Length: 191
Image 1 (cartoon, helix red, strand yellow):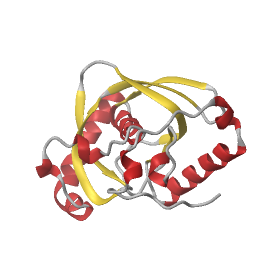
Image 2 (image 1 turned 180 degrees about the vertical axis):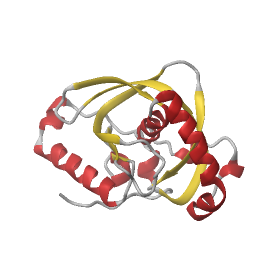
Image 3 (image 1 turned 60 degrees about the vertical axis):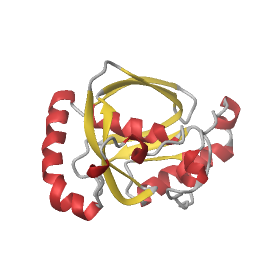
């Protein structure tokens, strides 16, 4: 496995729509090795997720995992999940405001409205169909990672630019109130 370099905001790869992965590609050693690298890179960077375009590979693949993450101590845990060719479908219109950051946008956070519930359809790394519902903060994480596959960054979804903050200022001025909101969301949705 190899830890790959993470593309930073401004690089054109982050603004391209990634292409679908064929079943033949998914079963091949090259894509399977890439998935291993994606997971290793995400873990090394303490990310909650990482999408293929973030490591300069325009494929519709992302990995998510939250296991007592030090960058996001308030996020509910998510078991390691690899999504290939994901499709997200909102369930209802309810949204919540999520303070987001991104490995490709260093030292910046901002408030993004996210759907509170959504259906996730994808293939796993072995080509098996996934079909489940994600809720609450976890649903926000899925939306953030899948946005990368369409060339979108969280900064594109921030509706109020006055919510932009560095990580240090977030911790100092905004994190306590945001933790309270996260606890309420987790209590309501279970994740």
